[in-house]
Amino acid sequence: MPDTHDASYYFKCVIGGAMACGLTHAIITPLDLIKCRKQVNPDMYPSMVAGLKTVHAADGMGTRGLYTGGIPTLIGYSMQGMGKFGFYEFFKDVYAGIAGENADRFKVVGWAISSACAEVLADIALCPFEAIKVRMQTSAPGAFPLGLGEAVNTIKAAEGTNGFYKGLAPLWCRQIPYTIVKFVFFEKVVETFYKYVFTAPKSSYSKATQLSVTFMSGYTAGVLCAMFPTLLILWYLN
View (cartoon, rainbow, N blue to C red):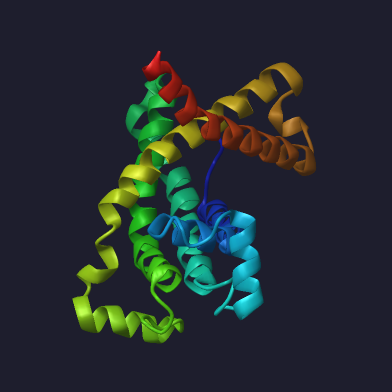
């Protein structure tokens, strides 16, 4: 019997998604800063560590130093997380309703479709903030404002609304396949835990145990997702 998902359940998914995506991406802003700058100019810093030390020495830890682009990162990925996790659970229920008695038989297809649909919408929310973040991090000093409001006005005045969405197609190409693999792996790992490790009915375990299973499954799925592109490349080369 499938779980009953009401508005409060979707709300929890939305809040959890915002915290999971927004906070984690915001925390690693310094790494993203150096990565983006080296992509634009490979000779800018000899290494990641050298880049971090150089920026910190010159501008400190703030939003004009190592955390340049941190505010749009926090907002954008929080919104992406809200859409990714909230809509994923919503579309899973929609798919199950459409598939009816065949929902369990074709559940992997349902997970893939639901995650793809969720990511399409989530990236629409993320894209404007990603555009702002990238320009903050890669523009020459003084060439682009580092305040969020000024940055929005600058792009809008120069390019209109299109300026915020020029990177949407590449973002979809990157994020949708990744999200499909991530959620399918996650669901399969959860199933495996409850089939081989926690073999009693799921409802018999405490909320803490269920949360631990979810955390372990998410971590494992993340590792598998990181390995998946490498395995595909190796398979193609061989």
